View 1 (tube, rainbow, N blue to C red):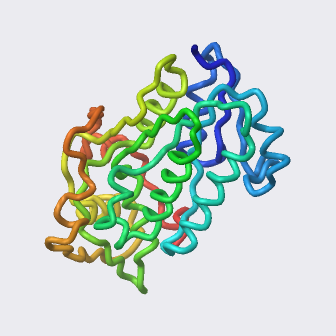
View 2: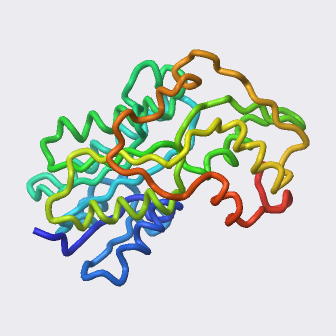
Length: 259
């Protein structure tokens, strides 16, 4: 049965706001849930009220951290709260995750990914109907890497191999899965071209001038440098190439980019 009420968790974030935008205008009630709108996922009573009557819950919550401990604590706790909040109603959960985040070869390097792996595990064990939407990295990631890896006037960006896509493309497929009468259990989405994210960061920096210098840190044959983030058999391959995305993006002046 098609959903009539879709709750979107973390609705003030970029991906989440695009999901809400995609749901509006459809024959569905879209409910935005976020701390900025008065509902903290840590408040079980408030969360239960907000999720009441939802046919589908889209979990696109985000927590920017490089700490594995902090990431696991946040994503595990948030998913557990959602499971407790919908007890007895059995809505379908559409969870946004990352391709191969659960692979120990990958998340040993990236604490955030270990958190996403913990989130997936909570939902799998919950018994709730589940649609897992896993994507590769987004084109928008290199700008964040430029900020996160900056030391003085230099950003040291790891040479991660990926097949990135635009966040808008990821949001589009989240909407499709939320509204599908029979959604796939797992959907893996990647972009059309393999790219070194450090090289992409250098191109972004050439547009935005965020830092004077970008140094690529080679990762060699580590999991991140040898393609472990790239799916072998993706369900969906998007169409926007890195060069098309770069040509379309609006450069950000250095004064507007928090560092």
